[in-house]
Image (cartoon, rainbow, N blue to C red; front, side):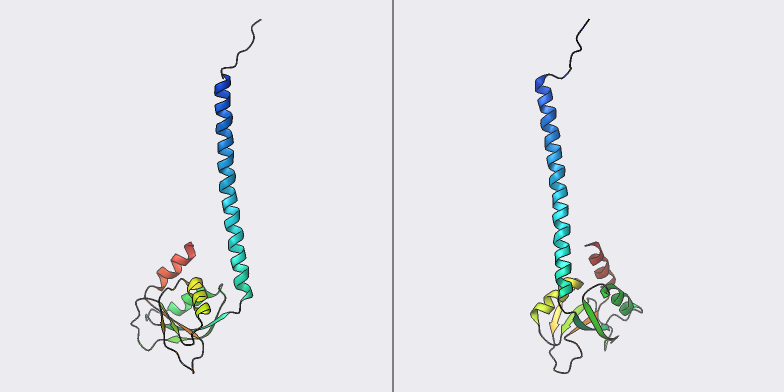
Length: 150
């Protein structure tokens, strides 16, 4: 009667064990990263929900029909209150821009982060309906798509 032999020597067995431990560790690290990222995003979203909504006016500055509707739908799930909509005086805007009517740096930064709009200009007015005006430019579809990916 012969004794069955193990093809793996103690050295090979040890290597396989180390490899399995390393793989399990890497998988655990990756899973931990995604759990951490998810919880961080939830905290940011819940913090934003506790802040008052940012009031804006929305103007179509590109002249494309339906641009204001598309932008309104895009902003619907954000903490933004659209007070008025309409057309800009001229349809000359290539880039979407935030026009600051009443300067509040913290709200401006929040608005930029929520919308992805990076360009802004200051045009203060005591008679503004809302502290910010978003003028929709010809890039609005790209802007919406890039924010949906994030």
